[in-house]
Amino acid sequence: MAFDLNSIVFFIPFLALAVSVIALSVAIAIHFRIKKIFRSANVPDIERLIALHSKTLEEFVKFKAESVNYMQTLNARIKRKTNNASTLRFNPFQREGIGGNQSFASVFADEEGNGVVITSMQTRERTNVFAKPLKNWQSEYNLSEEELKVIGQAKGR
Image 1 (tube, rainbow, N blue to C red):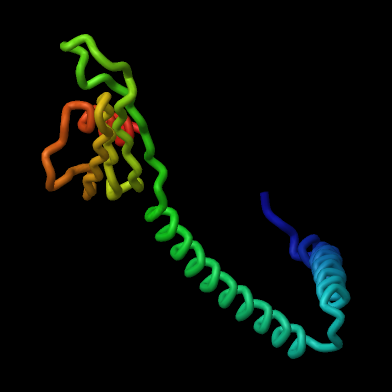
Image 2 (image 1 turned 180 degrees about the vertical axis):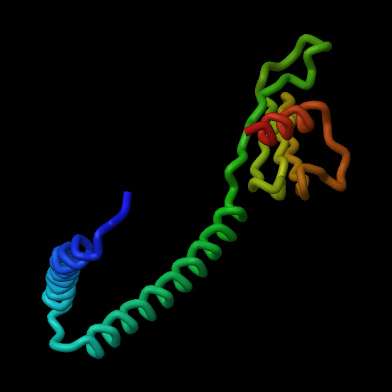
């Protein structure tokens, strides 16, 4: 199938017209988009528009840095707060058949296990209160069975 030179010459203007119409459509679309951008920014030229957007971007970068810093501060503060608290009531004299569940052991610790275990031992004659510091869910002092149990409950929360 051979193309005639006259046929090719005949279709070139139509092809040029089609390309011109497509280019004009794209130019009109771009014009309206640019007009919309300038209208929303309310600036007369592109230099001021770019300066405005640069300033806005700098403000966003500064805001982001301040926000990240604030979130890190909050995170550090939250870690120091007591969020693991548990109490266990018990009778230390069960075997002797006296007393009730008036004695208790309570744990107050942060999420890293730093805090205190407070134990109260109630008898008819007196009340003894013990406080043992916790570091990483451990204490340098000997812990009773009840204290270990209440530490396990608080750690599991």
